[in-house]
Length: 161
Image 1: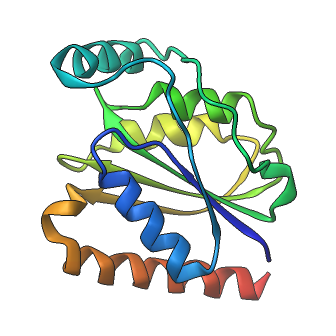
Image 2: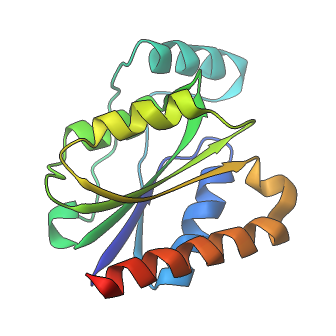
Image 3: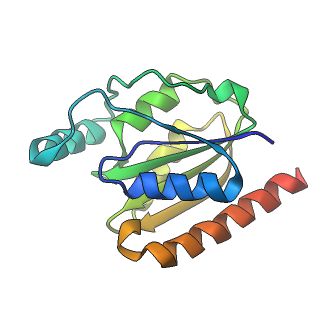
């Protein structure tokens, strides 16, 4: 099965997780680029506000289309108990109906509300895995093991189908 890991990362946490997943699963990888400036304290505040209000944003043109893949893994940081506007935009502007989709979130602390919101954006997809990691760059080696185990579970589930 052909797999794509797509993600948005402001601070590098989601990028680390996405790159680790792509390597473990032999998947292609694509960064979602938010064209709105999200740097510094002002970017942090405006990003949280936009996420809370379920706003979309302008994102850069992607090189890979999810329609060309059997499996899509989508990753996002948690902002104000919500997925980022860039990931919301990506999901809303790509038809993921019937696609096998797994998700990961990076966060400061466990956040079920954000997980629920992200799942609701993917209601037409076949959600088959979820992972939430707290500040993954703070415990790189430990999280590499957690990610590897999660990827093994995903690959096992895919092999059964």
